[in-house]
Every structure is written in C-alpha cells, then in structure tokens.
Amino acid sequence: MSPSKENPQPGERTVSLVTLGCARNEVDSEELAGRLDAAGWTLASGADAGEANVVLVNTCGFIEAAKQESIAELLGAASGRARVVAVGCLAERYGSQLAEALPEAQILSFDDYGDIAARLDAVLAGERRPAHEPRDRRRLLPLAPAGRPAAPHPHVPGHGMPGTGGAIPDLPPGTAPASGPRTVRRRLGGGPYAPLKIASGCDRRCSFCAIPAFRGAFLSRPPQDVIDEAGWLAAHGVAELLLVSENSTSYGKDLGNLALLDELLPALAAVPGIARVRVSYLQPAEVRPGLVTVMTSTPGVAPYFDLSFQHASGSVLRAMRRFGDTERFCALTDQIRHACPEAGIRSNFIVGFPGETPRDLAELERFLSLARLDAIGIFGYSDEEGTEAASLPGQLDPADIARRADELSDIAEELMAQRAADRVGETVEVLIEEDLGGQLYEGRAAHQAPEVDGVTTVASPVPLAAGDLVGARVTGSEGVDLTADALPAPPRPGQTR
Image (spheres, helix red, strand yellow):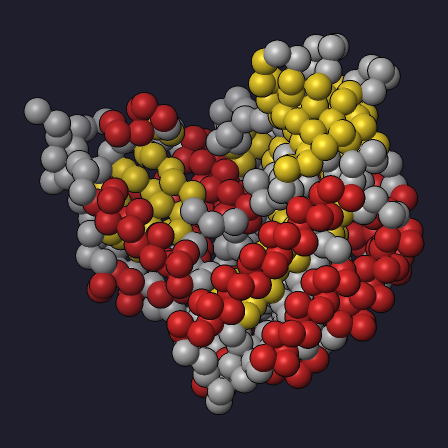
C-alpha cells in the first residue's frame, strides 16, 4: 500500500519540482533544487516523480491563463499521495488568499527560499505553516536605486543569500557555487541552452502590469557573480546563455553604471565554452545606441532584440504608461538593422486595452507591416487586480478582445512567415540542439530564441553534436522555421566535449 499524506514513509525526503511560467522561474527552480540537494533532499523527476513525498510547484501569476494553469497543476498534484507546496509568483502575489482558496496546498513566499529545505521538512512532518500576507515588495528596498545593493533585504530569488558572506559548505557535486555568497543552483534540464538571471524586479509603472508589486524593485546582480555563474554553466554543458530579468536594459543602474550591460556582454561572450550570449526583456525606451552597437558587433553576442513594444498607438501607449509610437519604434528597428541587417527582432503586443479604438488597432497593424519582426506575440488584454488599467474607462467586451486578438494573430502569422522567407539565401550560425537522424540536425539561428521562436533544420554530411555552432546557408522556410545547408567549414564547438 502506498503511504498516505498523513503517514509518509519515515526518512524519505523526496521532492518533485514542477516549474511553470517563464525562464526567470526556471532559474528560481534551479536555485530551489540546489538548496534542497545541498540539504540532502532527493530530487525526483520523470518516471520517479510519482514516488515523491512532496510536490513543489513553482507557479506563475502573470496573466489569468497562467494563474489557471498554476491552480490546475496544484489541484492535480493534490490528487496524489504527496504533500503539495506552492511557491513562485502566484504564491507570492496572493499568499493567505490562495491558501484559503486552495487548502490542498501549503503556500510559501520568496522569503522562504533561503530555508526551503527546513520548510519542506516541516511540511513532511505534518506541520502547516501560516501563509504570508501579500505585500508590495517594492517597499522592501530603498526607493533610490543607488541605495539598494548594500541594503538588507529579504530573499530575492536568484540573488544569493543575504548575510552569508562566506563559503557555502559541503555542496553536492554539480551544485553551484563552490564558495561565495552567490545563489546556489543545480541544473534541472540538459541541452546547450540555459537562462542566467542578471537582475530581478522592475521600477517601471506600466498600468497593466502587477509584476513589480510581487517581484519588487529593480535589483542588479553584481557582474562578477553573473560571470562566475556563466563559467559554472559552461562547465556543465551550456553553450548559449539566455540573460533574463524583468528589464534587462536597466541592468547596472543601481550599481552606478547605466552602461554596465554593454560591459557585461563581451565578458560573458569571452567565458570559455560559451558560444553565444542572448539578451531578453529589453525596454524600447531604454535601448541606447551604445547597447545596439555592442549587441550587433560583439563576437559571441547574438544580434537579437527582444523588445517590449506592447502596442504602436501613441494614445494607447500613454494609457499604458509607456512611451513611443509607430514612428519612434520604426526608427529603433531601422537603427538596429542599419547596424546589422540580419538582426532578429521579436516583441509582444496587447490588444483590447481599455479605450483602444479601431483606429488604434489599425495603427498597430500598420506598425507590424512596417517593422518586419521575426517573432510576434499577440495577447488579449485582461484585468489584473491592483493595477491602474483595471479601473480605466473604456473597458472592452471580452468577446471583442478575443476577436481582435484572433484577427491580429492571423496577420502576425503571415508577417512572420514572410520575414522567415526573406531569410532564404542568408548565411546564419546555428547552435545545434538535437540530432534528427539522416544527416539532419535541429538548432536555432541567432534570431531564434529557445522555446519562444522557430527552429532551423540543418542538413550536414559532417556529424554534428549538441552545442556545436555551425555556419549554414538558408535554403527554405515553413512558417517561422527554416531549413539550411551546413557550410563546409568545420563547426565551432560551443562546449568542451
């Protein structure tokens, strides 16, 4: 008979870790895994996940669909024998409210991450910890960015351990770091790609976004910590780094250097074993000419611009508390392509924002036609509790929002396919991810970020392996995906094999 939740088998400290949401959550989960591993917990995965005593769900609380997915995952886990614990954005954002609505799970805060092993020990022993009361985490750090690095603060996922200051003893093999106050991390997946967190939080006040309230004010990681972790990832088979944060263009502002990202990128590209560095989450209003130059001219840095435009109508953007319009955004994309014609550009857009008119929607469509973006994400607006946009006049009917989103998504699909077709004949560098057999290999060119963009299938008579960076000439396209022939030059190894 399987042990019950009330009577787990003694001595078994086995946890299944489920990650939902974005790449930032993936990094946070690897921190949790590193801490649990260091404390002697066994991480169960794959076929062994069903034998875990505890299911730890790292939730997402960004939009309504993500919340529902997180709740469904928690309820599904609760139907088994294991005890269920929720962490992550949904748990942080709602705390005791979520605990009341979902008594099947225990709810933990970001502040519990530093002692996660002790928290799960208590859960396994049958204790029920009172869930935290939600609070605005922006108030936990000084208002002035310059005062944040030295300020005492509760745990910020991915930013090390306040108060340790010295060596971290007796970490298991494969857990980073060997010493120092950086974050503890254990890789949960394989493959040649890995996210690397450079900052957390956000100081912007977009009217539709609740993230700053539960992720907190913007806080950069020290450059050397980031570089050291990049070296550790390279030693564990990573060839491409995906730099993540809530706003990468703000990196360094709290460290007294607004151009620190310009300096960090070449340093990361120079880490032995790293073939490519990719930046995500760039704010268009904060993209400086110097950053464009570094991203389009530094060997090993992908000329890839993940720009958060959100809309193109000036009036809608002002209501969103953002800046720009079609002309300004096209000037930015033109600047990027002037520096590097083959640069990749992607963005997400919200349709159906309160007050959006058919003219506003037509302006967004005009921008998409002009911008020739490689990847376009279209999202229908939904109210988020605690945001200014939820109380704005001009709220649209959900059915109308869905219709607008569907129509614009169809247009976006056509435009992305056209942009991919334009790349036929280009020479690209593809980081190989998988051997498909028959001398075919799947990977991603510089304009294709892992998981969110398309893939490139490379035909090569020379055997290739995951982590190889190979030059190829594009021969065809299907939707956003490309086919290419490997060039005769030998591949450049992205990792030591």
